[in-house]
Image (tube, rainbow, N blue to C red):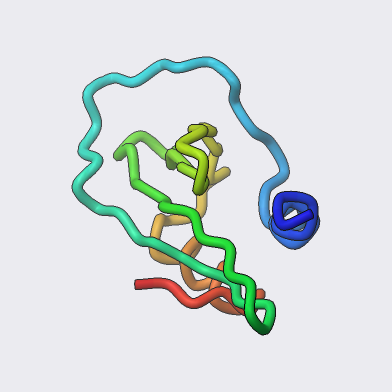
Length: 89
């Protein structure tokens, strides 16, 4: 249930998701952990800038998804996540 709610909230944020792993050695040191609280329940994911216009989203289960930022900067993406109600650190 938590995953369904989280995916519904973040579906509007991304337009395209890449399934291929084309890591070109970009820096993953710029990461933010964002969480969404539902009363006594919380969902969190880590978002890391790959340095090539994509980010890696790592969910609570350790599953990784590469997301194309489509020209947005990493900080703009995190700001968008915060505007949807997520708390990012």
